[in-house]
Length: 77
Image (cartoon, rainbow, N blue to C red; front, side, top):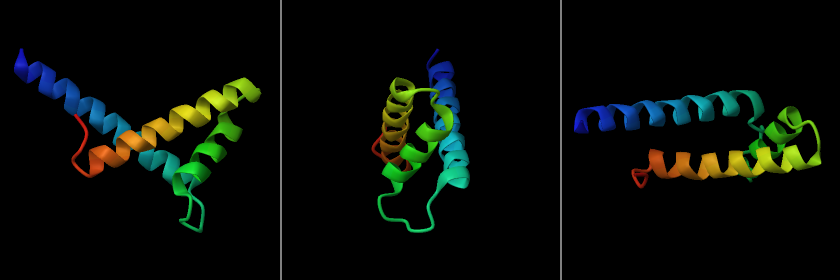
């Protein structure tokens, strides 16, 4: 049981990492300042069909980058 939980957790982390890399490749700005904000904004404009959906995508991407940062720096559960 524990092995299955650990494997699921590792797969989930792999998905987060792959998504972050894909978003960075597509939307990363040449200037690294405000990196998370700019990627979130660009992805929201690209993916959202209306204002409400863009706001949702923006928040989701920002949250994903927060989790990515914690994961990469060893602070994610």
